[in-house]
Length: 104
Image 1 (spheres, rainbow, N blue to C red):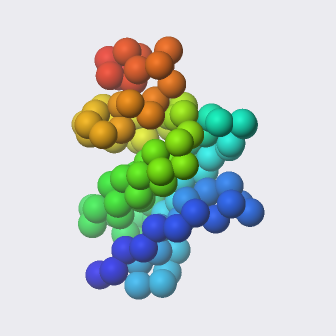
Image 2: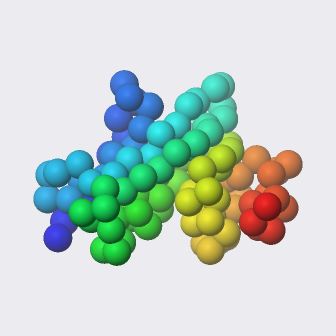
């Protein structure tokens, strides 16, 4: 199984494809130097195979590479940051870090 994640800026989302087929996505909005990822989902047909984790990690790697500040309003993305604080907590907006880490 080959999972590829790419940004689709026209649709404002990161897309995960498994062997070329759309398997999931993470929707976002960029405002200046801040990106809010507000929704992520994986098609149930691809569930349990790590597609969501690959999607989250690749999206966050790209956010970090662009130097954007992250607002993880999607519960899945926030949980991913919480379980992988190094290296992702540092890109979260400072005012939200404690909240993200507490899971509130």
